[in-house]
Length: 155
Image (cartoon, rainbow, N blue to C red; front, side, top):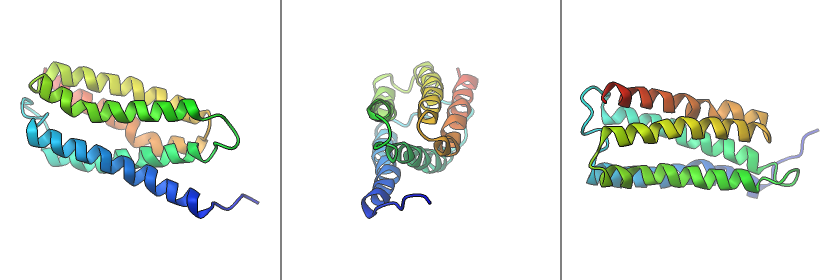
């Protein structure tokens, strides 16, 4: 029989999913307000396409992280948590870097290529702790090639 999750553990799932989403969406909102990253794209879906994708990709990644966090009593997950924070900061810094490069499509493309590499690393790392997290990471792993192709077409 599996252990029941405590109330704290359940709430941590909410924090990982919604907290991550809120942080990224605040950064995205500020980024789009000050310097829309899709402004220099000639052929791209509307901004709402990206917002909807993030509403799926970010919380599912948060849930995958929570599933790994639940293994903290069985394994040392500090490395995974460092990668989580590193990737979160990378996503948040995407928007200021877009502003700094004046929406340069090549810079955004390179950032998306790095997202592919990082998402594959996350997939591999999380799989070492929770096989279930792999299913929750599918949107993340699919998203970065899609957005990279959009940027590549616009180079």
